[in-house]
Every structure is written in C-alpha cells, then in structure tokens.
Image (cartoon, rainbow, N blue to C red; front, side, top):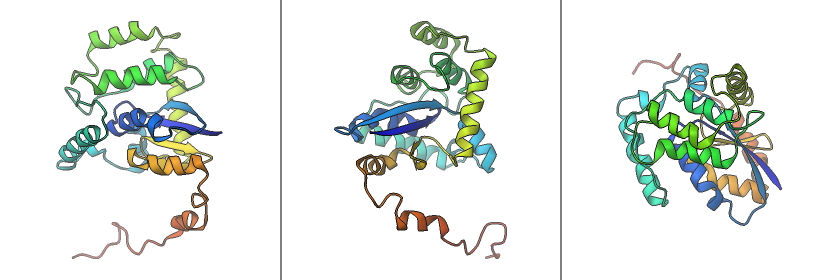
Length: 217
C-alpha cells in the first residue's frame, strides 16, 4: 500500500479540485493519505514569486480555468466573494482539529467546501464561527502549538522541495497540481517509468539562459 502526503492550502482552487477528485482518481487502489495544511504564501516568498491571483491577466484566466475544470469534472465549485484572502484562520482551525500536523478527510472537506462552495466570503467572522462550531476543534486554533504546527508543516514541505499546492508526496517523489492526478495513479500502481531513467534525467536538463543574464531583444 502506498502512502501519500497531501500538502494543501485552502486558498488554492487547484488544491480543492485535487482533493475532491482524488478518491475517483485512485479508485480501486490501496493507499493511505496524510492531509497536511501548509501556508502557500511562504512558498511564494521563499522562491521570490507572485501567486497566480497577483498577476493581472493570469488572475482572470486562473479563475475561469478552475471553474471550467470543476464543470468538466463534475465538481461543485464557485469563486468565494473575495480572492485571494488570508487563509491563516482556516489553516489553524483545521490543524486544531487534528494532531501531529495532519487532519482527516472530513475536516479538510469541511473547510474546502466552506471556501469553494456557495460563493461567500471565506473569512467572514460569522461564517468562521459557524465552521468552528461545526468542527468542534480539540485545541485552540489561536494556540501557540497550532501555530507551530503550521510553521513546521510549511518548513518541512519547503525542505522536501515543495513549491506549490496541491503537492502530493509519494516515496519522496513530488506531484504538483490538479492535473498531476493521472501521474499519481500511475505511481500508486507501480509504473516503473516514475523514478526511472527519464524521470531522473529531467532534473539534469541544462538551462541555456535565465532572466538575470538574458540578452536584450
């Protein structure tokens, strides 16, 4: 049986889509999953990047594309009233319901659907309080232990080479994005190509030019 570590941030529509699709994508296979909340913004900062929703043009395309992807895959998705938003309260609430940095599927589902169904404000105080009452966390979401778990999850993910969400880690191999689910299935099935010569060679492709030294047009 393969074990999957699923790194997620509730701010990401692609993480939501991958979460919803995962059971169907791996139907009939034997696997287990740890769902680990992380702070996507920390990945962007560590790599000196902007998020898709921070880039004009890409922002609008991303929203249209994820809505289309939901429609094409039979996944109920609506944009929240405002995006991007600060996901810290949601991440900490989820972790307060779990232990050792992981949450169960019910908690992840409840928080994802709070954000990505209904088109409402994901951080509205009354809605957050209602979600907290629904989930009945075992710990205080504002507690230092919960904050430390989120930081530890995020730091661990960065150390493993995670740069975005969703990322699924199987035996140290990282699969990024909603569209990686067919590769995830192949890995769980034991496809020898994954981890083979071509897989490994992809990490050694030379870069002929970079933005810092690219010649002027």
